[in-house]
Image (tube, rainbow, N blue to C red):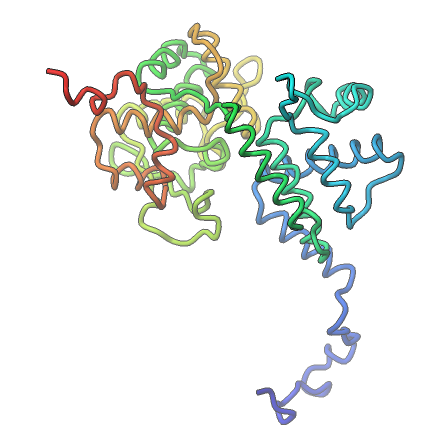
Length: 364
C-alpha cells in the first residue's frame, strides 16, 4: 500500500517543479491525448492503419447516404444490422442472390471512390469493416454494438450461409520455384532489374516475407555474414511486441545473397532502406512502399506471361509449399516463416491435391 509518509520532492530541492502546474489524475490533458494517439499509431503497421481509415471512410459515407445525417459514436445496433444486410448476399427462394443496398446508394458509393465496383462486399471485407467499427468504439471507451448477440449471431449465420453455397474466399496461388524462376528471368541488368531480382529472392529465400517486412529491411538490420547476409526481423505479424527470439534472424544466402550484393553495389546503398525506388536516368530514390512491392510482383508476372491473380503474398505461400515439396522439416520452415503453430503454417500450403501421394496409397 502507498503511505502518506512517502517522501515527495520539495520545491526547495527541485525548484523547477514549483513552476509546473499539477495535473488532474482523473483527466488527461490535450498534449497527453495527442501523445497517446501517436503511440497507438506507431504501434500499428501502415497497412493496418490504411485499412482502418478506408473502412471508417466507407462507414461514414454509407451512413450519410442511408440516414441523411453524419455518423457519430456510438452507432446504433440497428444501423450495424442494416449495414450487414445491405452488403451480405443471401439466397432468395427462387435461387437468386440478393442484398438490401439500394442501387442508387451503391452507385453513389462507387462514384465517390468509396467502393471499387458495384455489388455486394466480399465476406472478408464485410467482416473487417464491422470489426473496425467495433475497434473504434473500443478506443473511444464506448460499448460496441458489434458485440451484441444479435449482430454476432447475424455475422455467424452469414458466414455459414456463404460456406454452404461454396462462396469461400479464394486464396492467391503460390509462387513456387517454377513460376518464381519465370519472374526472375524477366529481371535484366538494369538498376530496376537488379533491384527486382534482389527483392524477389530476398522475400522468398528469407521465409516468404510480407510486403511490410521487405520494406523494413535496412543495411543496418541486414549486415554481411561471411558470403551472405542476416536479416534481423525484430517486428512482425507474429511478433508484434518485438520480443527477442532466435528465429528473428533470417539468413540470406546463395543466389539471394549474390543478388542482394549486386543490387547494393550497383545502387551504392551504404545505409538506410535497402529496397528503393529507381527513377528515370537510373537515379535511386526513396524507400519502396508496401504497395510498390505488390506492384513489382504483379509487373514481373505480366512480363513473364503468368496469369493473375498472383500477389506479393504468393511469395509466402510459395515458400511454404516449395519447402514441403522438398521435404524440409517443419521446424526449419517455421523458423524462417515465423509461424508459431503448424496449423497456421499449413494454411499457406497450396500444393495441387491431384498430385498428392497420400491420395494414391492403393496405387502401385
